[in-house]
Image 1 (tube, rainbow, N blue to C red):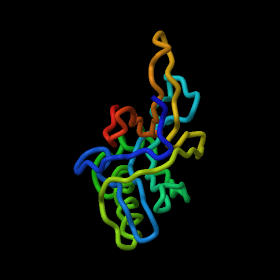
Image 2: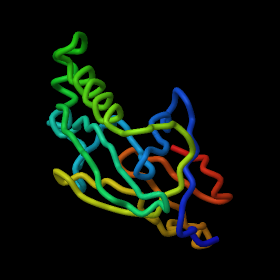
Image 3: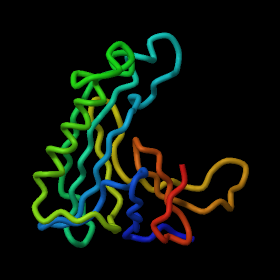
Image 4: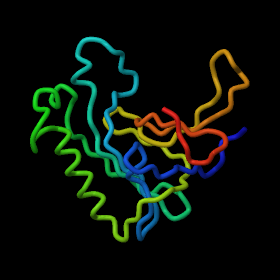
Length: 163
């Protein structure tokens, strides 16, 4: 089955899609996520390559991509060195995300429906990307993958995702 033009994403409180919804100017998808740059190969130094980002994507009411606010909070190594307190990488990321969400007028958490988009920041792929069936099963259906969160959306296109 072909990927639809507009992909539903279900709001799921207290889980991976708990910061999505609508606001006065359209729709939004926000998250805090670790990511590696494209092409990174695991090995020595991975703790510095694994970076934490605060992400806020904005879309119009019809799901067309408008823009993103992507903020680099720090590395996995930095978080491990200072895992607790207000100066930890994660605490700083959570504070930044709260600021971004508070700036969205008339924000309501709920299901959204957006169109595929892509951008690269710091060598990291962000976006909702259409993926083609591949591997041994050539009959595998296409799907949409949200990067770098690695949430996969597929038939029956009801907004549920797999990881």
